[in-house]
Length: 305
Image: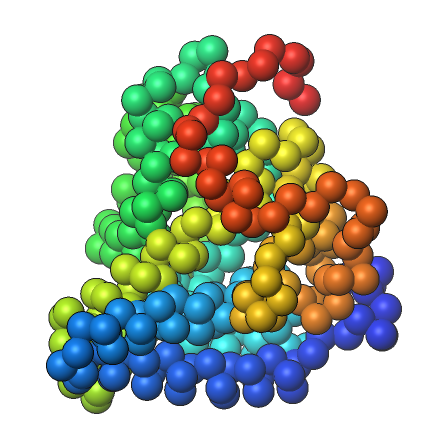
C-alpha cells in the first residue's frame, strides 16, 4: 500500500472479508431464486437485487486490483480471483485493463463523450450506446475467452489505426505485452470453472442466469462512464464525485466518489469520503446518466491537454 496513506486510512481487510462473506452468498441465493421461481415478477426482482449485490462484489474486485482489499498480498489476490469470477473476468486481466485506464484517463483514446475531428461518428455512437445499454459488459468476458484460447491475438493490430485509437483497443492491448500470460490464462480458466460449478451446484436455468446478468450488465455499465462524462480533461481530476442515494453509495462501496479515487487510488473505499471536496460541483448520477442518452457531443475545439 502507498506510504502516503496514514494508519487511520489503513486497508479495512476484516471489513472487506465480512462484506465478501455477505455479498457472495446473497448473489448465489439470488441466482438460485431467479432460476427456480415460476413468477416472472419474482425473477425480475431477483435480477434487480443481483445487479446491486454483484456491483458490491465488483467493487471488492476493484479494491483487490489496487492492492487495497487486504493488507496481506496473498489474501488480497485470492479474493481478487474469487470476486473476478462473479463478473466474470480474470483477476490479472482486469488489473492490466483497469490500471491502464488510470494512466489513460481523459486522453484521446478514452474520450468517448466527444466527437474528435477524425472520429468515425457511427462507431463512436455505437460505443456510447453500447455502454448505456449494458452491451459493454460483454467485452471483458469475451476478451478473456479470446485471451485464454489465442493470447497471441492480443499482440496483433486487429483494427485499423483510427478505430484502434477511437475504441481504446490499441492502448488497452499494449498493456498485455509484458503481462504474465500463463497466470492470466489460469485465472480466466478458474473463473470459467467457478461459473460452471455455480451453475451445476445451484441447478441454474439459462433464463435465471441471463436475467440476473443482464440486469447487472445494465447497472454496472451505466456507471462506468457516467463518472467521467464531460469532466475536465485531466488524468487525475477527470472524473466526478457523483451524488447518489446513500444506500446505493454504500452498496457500490463509495465507487461514486470517483474523482477522489482517481486522485488517490491507494486510498481504500472506506476512507474515500475524507478526500471528497464537498464544496466542488457534484452532479447527481441520474442527471449525468440521463444527459448521456443524448449522445456524444462535438469536440468544442479548445486545445486538448
